Image (tube, rainbow, N blue to C red):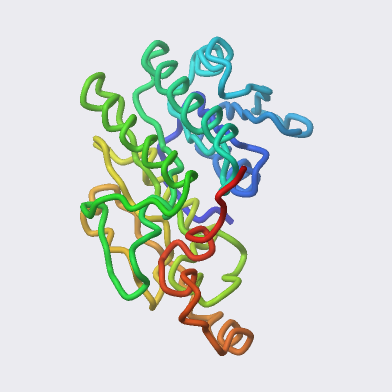
Length: 272
């Protein structure tokens, strides 16, 4: 059963990064919201289901990305490198690729992008702080830096060209939280769907930043400023607390991953 019953339907939606973990989940969840769902990745997308279009498109290929956005009503942009890696892959997919996507959106007349940013844009805030999108970015690695670039680029394309973006600083979207950090960062797949659909269908989005998390008891992020999007999470990590805490009873406070919101990302790398 779908998590949302929104009646707005798009002629053609584009989902990039459709072969990734969240992409595979949203592939089935977005189809009821559009006549045609165009799916893009460089990995295997399998066979096209009814109402799907498949495209193998490297984000760093500007001409290919321009063609990818032809006839598209809106974009859910999950594509790119999603973990801390050496710089060159991040540069090509997350920097060059994001520029190519926004420039293609401008040329093809696409008016709204839902951009998968990351909580790692602010990963060097401590876990004993509650922050909002108004607080300065503090990336916890090169991946976080690339997402900070993406948010700044999206802001520029809104201010200069009027392309609306909802930048989703996604926490940890899995079936269940895997550790005590994720009791704060977890977002259920149903809430992921609610967040993406709200971002696509809000009457006025402008340039908005919202943290992607469920209604967890432990909260590091204040989404008040993005209330106009209409995202209301329905799930919580609390049902998993006892089991998670029983597996991880002792925390090492000499470990930066325990102190900072970015978790292990704050000590990943550098790479040669």
